[in-house]
Length: 63
Image 1 (cartoon, rainbow, N blue to C red):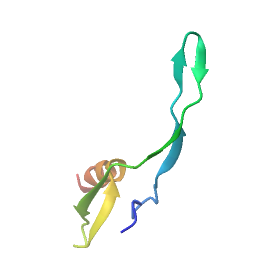
Image 2 (cartoon, one colour):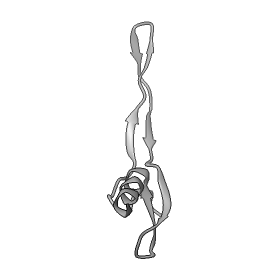
Image 3 (cartoon, rainbow, N blue to C red):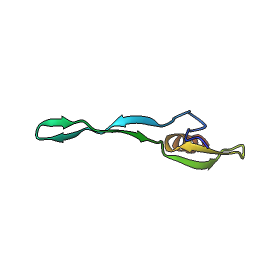
């Protein structure tokens, strides 16, 4: 199962963590950050994995 939002297509990104030590930045490793995916049931009854931003947008459409 892919870690991708099925509504907007948001996926993981690679970020570099910069640690400052005595006024200089240390060379640091790259990290992968994943979106906040949750299982949610759409109004048509289908279950999908959606990011938190899309879940908020779905909730606003219903009201």
